[in-house]
Length: 137
Image (tube, rainbow, N blue to C red; front, side, top):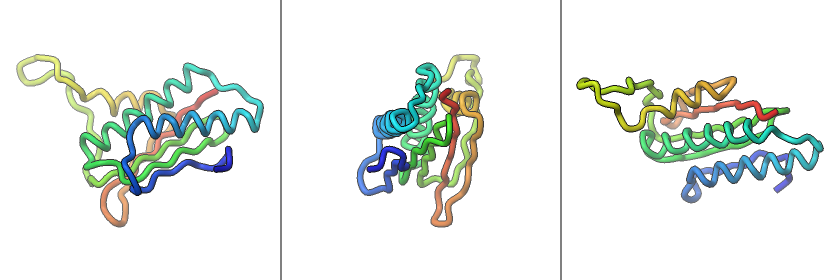
């Protein structure tokens, strides 16, 4: 793999959150070595968290990850995760009807807060693709 090439997983094996986080690290290491530019570690942590949330949500709510791509675009990480579900992400109230705190439900707001651009698109074969761009400089 060329250090500047995007990293993909196309349903040819299990794709896990750790796989996407590793792909981000490899892509940043390759790009940083090629450009000599360091990345802000706090911002990189944000990109890793966004990747974890997107992949975890695809597994928990989307019927599994069918594809992912990681690419470095200038000083930003672009991570795209596809799943089998046509359902769009939703924000849920952190409290249930009895006023008790719910477990979960915080991933999508985290993605939307940390990414400078988030896009959800339907796939021709069914399912959806979510792409988030997170600045890392």
